[in-house]
Amino acid sequence: MTEKQHIMIKGVKEGLLFLLDDQCTFEALLAELQYKLEKTHQQLLTGPLVHIHVKLGARSATDEQKEQIAAIIRSQGNLMISSIESDTPSAQASAGPNNLQIITSIIRSGQTLTHDGDLLLIGDVNPGGTLLCTGDIYVMGALRGMAHAGMNGRHDAVIATSLMRPTQLRIADVVSRPPEEWISGDAAMEFAYLEEGQMQIDKLSQLFRIRHNPITFKGV
Amino acid sequence: MGEAIVVTSGKGGVGKTTTSANIGTALALLGKKVCLVDTDIGLRNLDVVMGLENRIIYDLVDVAEGRCRLGQALVKDKRFDELYMLPAAQTKDKDAVKPEQIRSMILELKQDHDYVIIDCPAGIEHGFRNAIAGADRAIVVTTPENAAVRDADRVIGLLEGAKIPSKLVINRIRQSMVKSGEMLDIDEICQVLAIDLLGIVPDDEKVISAANNGEPTVMNPASRAAIAYRNIARRILGDMVPLMLLDEKAGAFKRFRKFLGIG
Image (cartoon, rainbow over all chains, first blue to last red):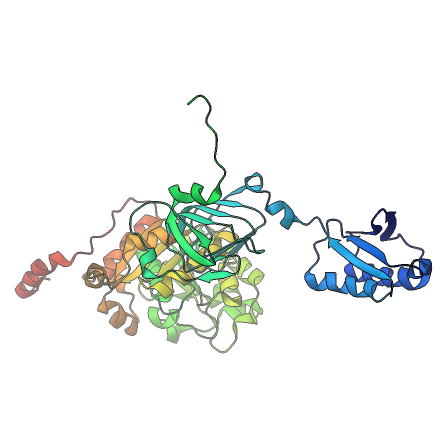
């Protein structure tokens, strides 16, 4: 291994910390991990049970990839995985309104807008258009297409819009088709949210009730 | 230097070719020098609608492959001196020409025509990319049906991506069905598509008979569709023309005139 090392191994109080590079390819990482454990760091493998913490850096690894890393480490008898972590944007997404992005556009048929975090779209989503978002979706305009909020599994995400006429709504893993009674007909802005795994629609003025972040007014 | 306008829709059968032929003829009627370009290679129709099928010698693919000069392939209209048509090939496929070849042809045509009207094939594949290659602006044709509006929306998105400004023509409106709520109304369509409306064309049986006779409807001023197309042509030239009223209230009067034999 003459090139740059992608893996750093540090000893910490709880056991060993594996710091994995987040720039190189995933395959290179796996190869080096295997090489290090089997060839160069043999001394780790003898002795008592050691707890391993793996830090992936900014790399966003799928569960499958994490499992691949875990498999290599686990194949050595005395190493035990305690955690595999990465500081991926999904962690930031739950940070809330700080991550709100404003986009002015019309999402037309066949177009897909993917966003990480909360999204405020100023414009319409037309039938056949798709909005995908890891956080909340707010549409100032008509929602006539498909909207998926909380894509990575956030069940508390909401979809709010000036005109609720979607072909389909999705929050986290719940998919809902609008039944007739959704179409309220009045001009009030509405939002969709999940309650016990069921999609619900309510007037936008009720959003604060499920958000529980009250503002305390002073001097009243 | 003229202007190239592509007539497109996404969905087939909404009246792209009819609209191209009629707008082109209406512009010629208003004294402009116009060239119609059929890019529907393999399924050419524009020549049939214009009644020029038997005058074709060379076609667009011949020009692209260098078998003739562009000027040789142009077919002069039998009604107007200043109206020409560049026919598509019937025997080849859409990928027989590249967008760059069309672009240079359109550029050449723009040199000595006021308007170049490009008839686009249905779909959004190679043929569509060919058709929009040289266009300065677009006319999106739709009918008051959900499927057509959906496809028009898709096409408008693609045109926006290609930075071609587009305007809308709603074709084959049946006022009686709109009134009874069976057909989408104009406001609804405009709200979804969110582009400027260039014109509305009522459904008219005369359009079909005219197309079969190889005579664009515009030539027959008794047809309501003809008036609609003439209005569209005037709007293209920059005139402010109010939208035509679709209410068939004039029917009684018209019937009366017909009765007298002057309608």
